[in-house]
Image 1 (cartoon, rainbow, N blue to C red):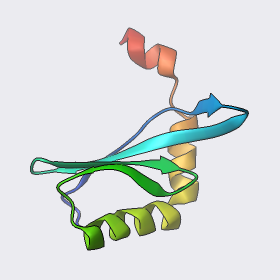
Image 2: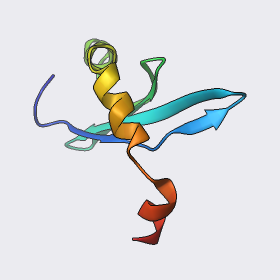
Image 3: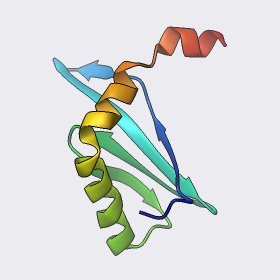
Length: 81
């Protein structure tokens, strides 16, 4: 993946007993959002289909790291800052 893409990870959410987090990608006016652990892009504005596949592949390859990042985010504390 291009190193100029900015990546952000949300805290962990839970719905219907399943935990998930969002991973956001952005660069030069383009943006995409994926969901882990599904590793699927759920929103895309400007990335081509091959680039979207690269973002999904990235989430799959880095799933363990992304999960650790998400679990380390304290949503309440982040809102207070």
